[in-house]
Image 1 (cartoon, rainbow, N blue to C red):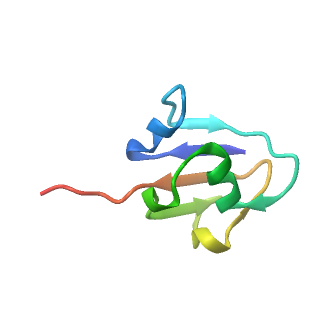
Image 2: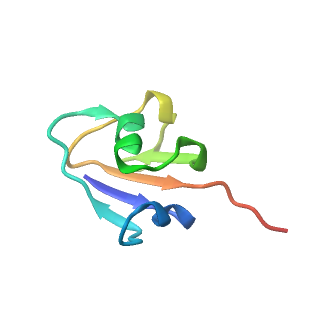
Length: 76
């Protein structure tokens, strides 16, 4: 699957990549994947699987999916 880490989320990848290829042996909950990758749930405000916004707590992902994650936006 292809994982896009938007905003500052790329800091959770050891190589600071915004796009990461992840091989999944089987379908799994998105929350489990985030835990495995060390990306805190609290840092994500928007998640999309294959172009559709999804509630993170209910989303499942599989090899071949495209997952986009975005943090809250701040500023003033």
